Image 1 (cartoon, helix red, strand yellow):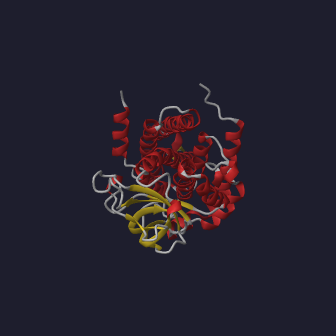
Image 2 (cartoon, rainbow, N blue to C red):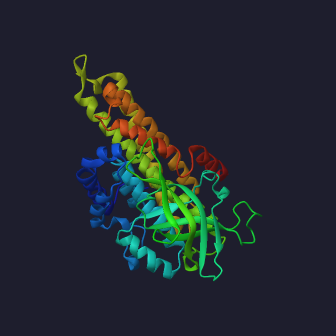
Image 3 (spheres, rainbow, N blue to C red):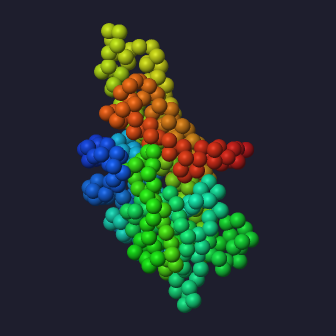
Amino acid sequence: MDYAETDEQQMIRELVRDFAESVLAPTVEHRDQNQIPPSAEWQEFLEFGLQGVTIPEQYGGSPVDDISESIIVEELARIDPSFAVMYCVHVGLCAKTIALHGNDAQKEQYLTRLAAGDVGAYSLSEAGAGTDAAAMICKAKLSDDGKHYLLNGEKMWVTNGAQAQIIVLFAKDVDHPDYGVKKHGGSTAFIVDSSFEGFSVGKKEDKLGIRSSDTCTLVLENCKVPVENVLKGVGKGFPIAMNALDNSRIGIAAQALGIAQGAYEAALQYAHEREAFGKPIAYHQMIMAYLADMATRIEAARLLVYRASWVKQQHYEHGGPRHSKEASMAKLYAGDTAMWVSERAIQVLGGYGYTKEFPVERFFRDAKITQIYEGTQEVQRIVIARALK
């Protein structure tokens, strides 16, 4: 097995790290405290073309391998986890889903816009349908003229909800023969443009962490979606949603990895600068143990994330097995690692770690969500256990 990064992967890492340190770092604390989305920073990021890494070249994309995609997320999250999740949702849940399941006309219309910089989002969850995704009640009904679906309901926890122009959104077709018969009967994936009649953005959540990422409710009141915007077919939405989660769990694992790396680096630097009892605290046995365990867990998480990324690529390029187990393992371990490392980082910094003067307090708040979204850690264990033979 070759664990060395390719020249291209190293170049991508250096490019994104430089962007994160020069563009995101100066504004991240202000945006976090005031819940300001990184809109200006996104416009600067577009100059690199990395918003199109999951989009084929014929639609304006600049595709990279799946490990490179994880490296991009990791490096963004090392500085700004909010920007990282904005990017994850755009390239993974939105663009990748359309690239995999859209027809030629849908790809031409929407992937070109996503590659050009329009922000993408994904909307599956509802008030009573988070972990139990099949329990959604948002309804879709064909209009009398047969040209549109009319969507009604509220979708929740939508990352990029206020910024997105293009949303992959799920609702149940009430006229589908399986509606009311099977739990996920009638589930259908739609491509929704934020300019569509009947679409509006509702409440913005006031969150513990990733506060620079807008998380909103979407309100659908007879939202008119052209029939041409159904992905793959009416009633075929649930497998699309589950496949999208397989992909996005790797992105969230990479985000968690970046959070852990950022918190560890802050703790390591502080431990070498702060002196107690005549020497830097990095040379006191208890702190040494913390730092050693942090570094070891991060490396283990990185291997799981990169392996899941590799298995995902084998699945799509060579027809290999699905990557559900590997994605859930990566997300489970990396999420727990982010939480564990960021908590230890605060301990290393002591009282300073509990203040907003240092970034570990923010990393600690940001880490928690990686144990919740894209399926809770409890769900990841179920997915893993079901895959064991």
